[in-house]
Image 1 (cartoon, rainbow, N blue to C red):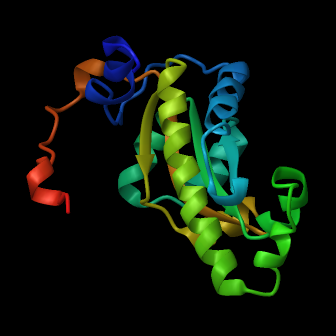
Image 2: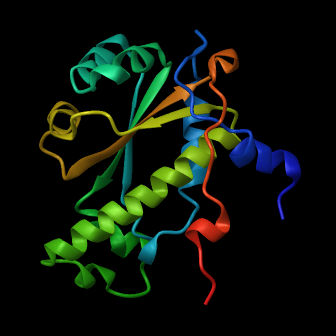
Image 3: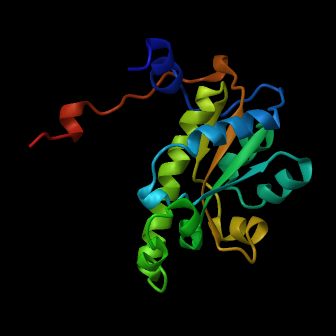
Length: 193
């Protein structure tokens, strides 16, 4: 079991941030977070998550046109915005990532299975990435308020990648956090049968 401090960093004291300190995020820290996230499980080790880390002023301006109005200010202020995407051709890499059998054959020519697997596992990996970012000392501001079609055209044109969600990364301004919203109790959402 991980220690109490780790639980606080990852879950109980971690918060979704919308306000950011003017403090850059080192590229090596982003790589460290990714290197942790990639170790977590996906079905058949399919590893469909792809990330574009938007840092430069030019890239931020390109992303700005994809954002819903309520997400513009906080995203422009964040040191980094990760576009969490998934690869619709992930199965072409299964020979490398799942080499003990012909897993590619499970997906080739099966668009519904490809789509379900890419989205499900890419989303799962996105969640792992948020925890990994917290583990390396970053605050996160995940969001889905953006135009996926515009984002895909701007950042993934002529690729098999599709955007899933965005996550602002950096060092949050703790003083601007609102009180934590309630969460459902175990008995409200779970059943043991």
